[in-house]
Length: 230
Image 1 (cartoon, one colour):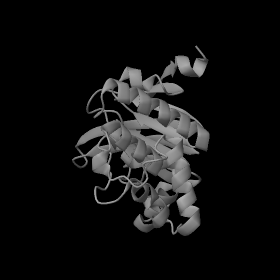
Image 2 (spheres, helix red, strand yellow):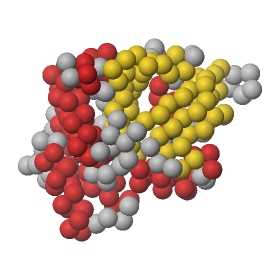
Image 3 (tube, helix red, strand yellow):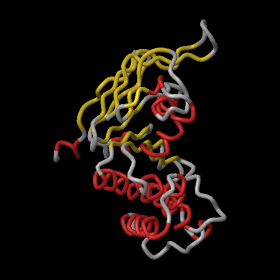
Image 4 (cartoon, one colour):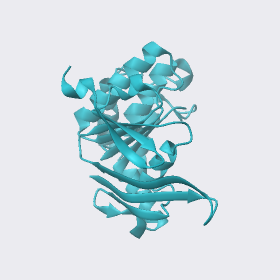
């Protein structure tokens, strides 16, 4: 579903600093991996390249059968809307829309409206434990609840890939654990693949396997206890 081959990204021109160098990754549908690394190792840059928000200097990225280097900006935008769901640390929930309206945004961008959109939003809110909060305004929700809304929004259009960038960085430990469990179960329930970028070993342990991003690329840090059934 996703393949990176020799991906390199340098900032500052020909003699600039290589943020990513020779990164290889293969991810199948239904697989959920965590990417860890020191601050400045390029974790967020990696997500930006996978999402087509930035372009690699060298190497190849193929998402859902599409070579990103061969797509223009409009085609990348269309692929991103259809195939990718995002969960961010800062939630990015629009304060002037209700919970249900926030979740429905990806569907509206794809032209899915009316009864079908209403049913998908309702089902996703039930799935994240907010079935009775669709009419609530964001200011009425806790941080953990806002992140649940963000997860519902990321999955409502049934993306092939979910990208989560430090999704629990603004949450207390109890809320963080709940959100991480919810993210994992919802990704598996929808059959999407997922990449969780985090500095937290505790958060990473909820994924199927952990990858470490270093100056030499990505290396496998092993299967998690959850994946091994321990």
